[in-house]
Image (cartoon, rainbow, N blue to C red; front, side):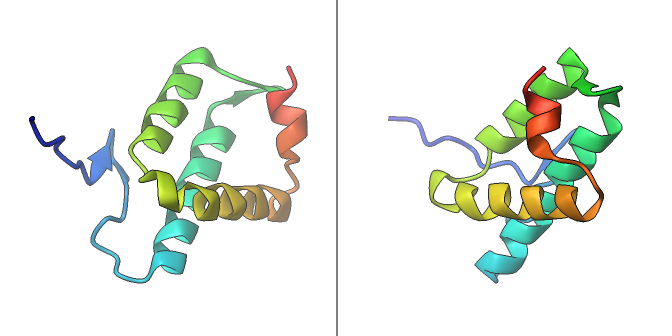
Length: 90
């Protein structure tokens, strides 16, 4: 069975695999996801290419660490005045 290679970057976005603290690593990943959402917005929608990039980036986060990243992403977006429900419902 082949071992899947872990990447530490996707299109210039770090996955922070080298950060030892899981909370900081998750916060950093959440901030990256928020940045991707914010930069990929056109009005209240996210461009399709950005959505694909977000999904791929998130798929590279280990399953056991995804909740921390999503929670951090929501907090960062809220701090920026962006409601995630407004972005994803369209």
